[in-house]
Length: 243
Ligand code: URA
Image 1 (spheres, rainbow, N blue to C red):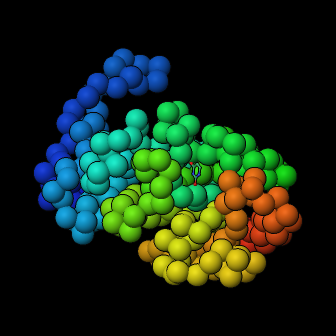
Image 2 (cartoon, helix red, strand yellow; image 1 turned 45 degrees about the vertical axis):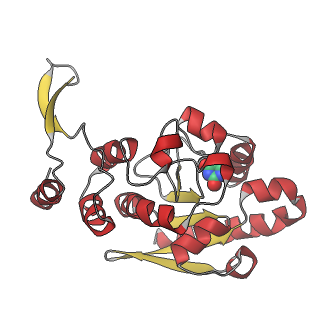
């Protein structure tokens, strides 16, 4: 943990604790890891954001797993952090876990997820290899209702830190809720898709492409051709960002 991380954690009363961890090929070694990362409900959003912005991947995973920042923690089975390599150059961002995701702890594993995998495969991409997949909300809203603005605000620091740590070459945002949250707009997917937006975090500006949510495409297959065009646009932005 570096100095700024230590200060942020101290400000929130989230001191790291010691835990034994296996060292590859050697004896068990004591290492300092935050296993009690649960952010208590009374932590103000601004303080939460400061703490989260200094976390590394392990701390972020622990903080999301133990998060109690909004009432969704009462109804979730588990928080869904996201899946994929921590060095993936593609990032896909959806809305929130559904029932299946809540049960399994992985995003996009239901019917919509299968279509997403097929769309990625058509680009030659696999979730375990090339793409980090996350959601705006880490916990399932009951009855699959839309996330509330308050829930999005509480969860935003986690996604922002995921984007910053990953620093992907391109972000593909699927569906209205995620597009509106990331681009801070009320515009429709139809009006946002088909062009490359920019997402700025820290010193980086990342190309961002909006497309239809796979669950919508299952209901409206006629729009699959538009979604494919969006993915091709994302591919071009990705390759261009690679230099
Ligand atoms: N829909 C989403 O937006 N995310 C998931 O993880 C599953 C379904």
